[in-house]
Length: 446
Image (cartoon, rainbow, N blue to C red; front, side):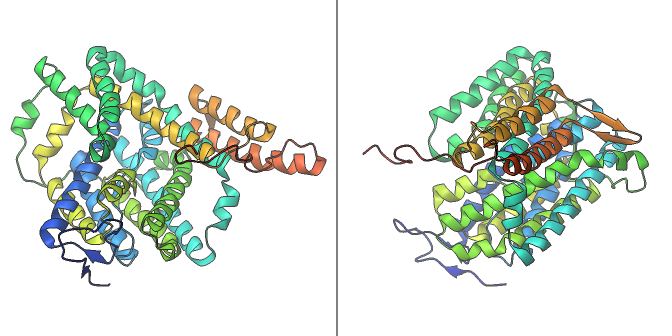
């Protein structure tokens, strides 16, 4: 593993320069940057266990451990924080009718799906390391990838509404705060608008007497996280594993996008050759979390934002962030505070959050100029969206296939089978590739 070299004087980053992954600032500066990464990931990472019912402290622990595992497997060359993946929310909460899990048995059953997803992601990583990412792009072209990402977010809409109804006033304040902060602040503060919105909603709920602090007062400052062992021998747990399979496709897209983003920002295309290692690392981290009670992990766009704002891509900062997260995990009082977040705050923030997941999928279409005048593309999205939003389900014996699984299968089958038929018949209904650019793409008007 390379030792970081000091960037310049260790205190400043010259205009137009970046601190590369194998460089670092002086240690006070590195620790400060690492702390920013913790703040950036915190808002989103703690929301997943709060929404799903997983232990918060345990999720933080495996988030930090997963980050260190990622740095080790990628040979300290890819800066990334592994936070909780929102893609796991839908299949996890599906175990309890779309609501957060309520019993240890439900948690251990859900952990099996998380662990299996991790194993499959790592397997894909080994394949990518050997053969590259071309086959992924053929399996999931932009219209399919965007549909799968978007339908996961839209499938969760009823859960957001369910929490919103419980405390509509608090939920409305939270939602308005999230939106306001996103347009009011520049740079880093704008990127953590969801976190800031949660704080505002929580304060309003506390001031109006809608938060119960008894559990916080009773929780010790230091203690072990609440571990749960994966239910490998539970037949009922294996029956719900198919619901987690589409998550693997989302994790692939997120990791590939992360590596490409970092390679572009650091102007180092050689980082792309580590894509397979990134997938393996995230797979191992997710499997580890699933084995003992943590939520599945993924690379975090929030931390990409911190790197873009600071121009510091040093992996040393991520070692600091991972270690800080691990330390926080050993404070039951921290976990107790998060568990007091009322339903209204969750309803407000998830109304925005789930919609944003859908928007990410739509952005994939925009960025790749998907041609929606083609019937194959139209029906790929139309059918998969209705399946996801309506909550279609299929039970085959002990196997349960939820809306996300069915929507994903529909998108893949309609696209590939439809293209094959249209091209065989030469009807012009197939995906003809990106639509031609009209006018200038980006930048200031000429």
